[in-house]
Image (cartoon, rainbow, N blue to C red; front, top):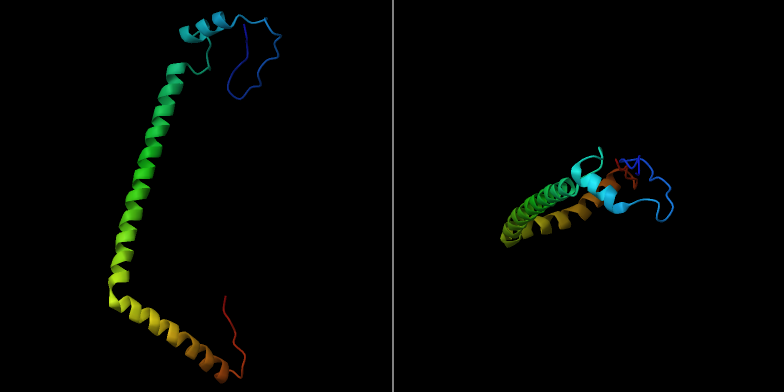
Length: 110
């Protein structure tokens, strides 16, 4: 037989025709090869991973929808635009005031 085809181990070197793959597959199906994933176990693991991915995607979409709704409310509110305009208008005036009061040099704190 194959001997050492376990997870994490390199596959053994075999010559073509040296291994009876039908017999080896029957051993796997009977559970005689410890440490080798059975087809049913692999399928179950795949299904679990698929369900986790679907749930994660659904949560992400729901969170994104909630965030989009809250940002839509902000955009519809006239106060949002007024605050943005005031901030845009006030920022250059603040920079001018800082540069004139410090003699033209502004120390930026990063």
